[in-house]
Image 1 (tube, rainbow, N blue to C red):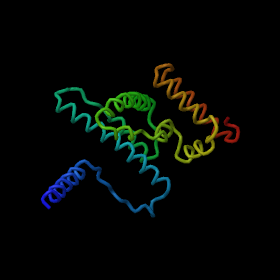
Image 2: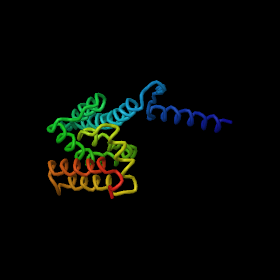
Image 3: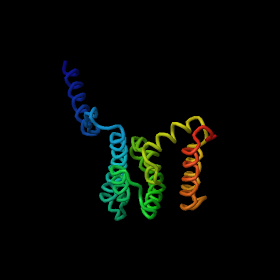
Image 4: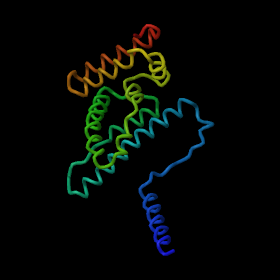
Length: 190
């Protein structure tokens, strides 16, 4: 019997430890929220998850005595743009894409500490919104280019940019050209 109680205590301690480590959840009644507004909210939550990850990384660096901090202010500007159905200015767009490149590198390092970090990616819809496409256009781009090379070509160009093979201006110009072509002629985007 004593062994059983010990196991129960251990179980309760483990349960409490799990509660301390677990994410907190929020439930939101979305029945009265328009589809477009709901998508903006989802994208904003995605951005907040990225910011939260970097805030934890900054706290860890501070405790280690490292003076460098990850600046994620561009993501807050991006979230504001998403919520207000606006795109970023050219300067902010370049900062955003520089952040994306840096975040990919940071995320790989943080995965060594917490494997859950790998699940926190920046939704590609945000990229397209910040370039200047609206939510309806983004949805059409993905729907029309599924099983075709349209959107995949965008991801190829994005990888070239992240890898330093093409300039930011060329990346944006080619992205707009490809995605505008998909929107203009959805049936022939292959």
